[in-house]
Each structure stands twice: as structure tokens, then as C-alpha cells.
Image (cartoon, rainbow, N blue to C red; front, side, top):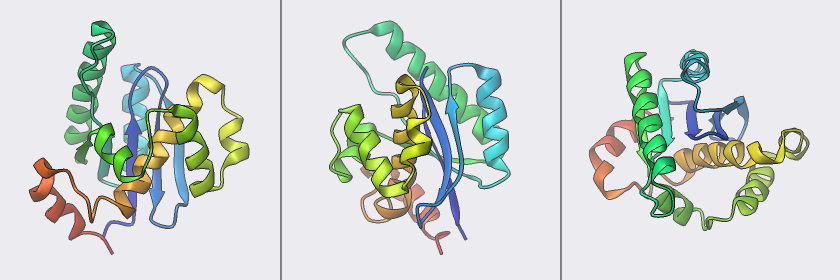
Length: 168
């Protein structure tokens, strides 16, 4: 039975967390593009769960370097997570944010995470530049429990059946 789910908002100012369906946080950490930090964080969360929801990289027309780095980073995270026995569900930010009625506005994500997880003091204790990565990792975890069972992405129906069958 899946009781905990790990989720990652990748990137230079990303975040990683482990939550349960009652919005209780079991692990929360900033995540950078540093491979050593990624490995350490994934090893820690692997001790709690084997399911990882990862925000997928999307093609951005504004900055090719940033886009390429995100694709590389997602591939690295996916490969390492699979290597340590985690099942990775890649989620398009457009899809999961649309399901949760969120926009691209990072402040909106921070506010929603504070509402759903009751972590205003903790989240505000982080520097402003890292809050949105933490907030979006938390929101992706919330999506995993409360929206993914009902609104999977079309290309993930087979994976959806396998994951949702493990839920309590």
C-alpha cells in the first residue's frame, strides 16, 4: 500500500518532499542541480517510499540553456531514482497545475502550499528564491494523492493503473 509519496520540483531552486494523503510532511528539503545533493536526497526519501512524482521538463522558447539543463536534470533524477528501486511518475506542470487550478505564478503556489500543508512559518523561513521550489514539490505530492487517481495524463494510463492499485 502506498502511504507516502515523494515529489520533486527540479531545478536550481527546486524542492523535494515526502507527504501522505493527509497533507502531513515527512521530509522537506531544498534541491539544487548538484548531483551529489540529488543522490543524498533520493537515498533519504527512498527509505520512506518507492514512489516518486517528478515534474517533467517542458520546452521553453525563452532560454535554450535552461531548458537543456532541466531535461538533463530530469533524466539524471529519473535514472538514479530507477536505479535505487523507485517508480517514477513524470508529471507535466501544465497538467498537474491545471488540475489544481494553479497558474504559472509562483506566489500563488506558495500561498496554496501554505494553505494545504499549514507550514507558513517553516516555508517563510527559507530564502524567497527557494520557496517556490519547495511549495511546488509539496503541491505535486498533493496532486499525487488527490488528483492523479482521477485525472492521470493520457500517456500514463498503464502506469496509473499500477500506481493507484497500490493506494490504500
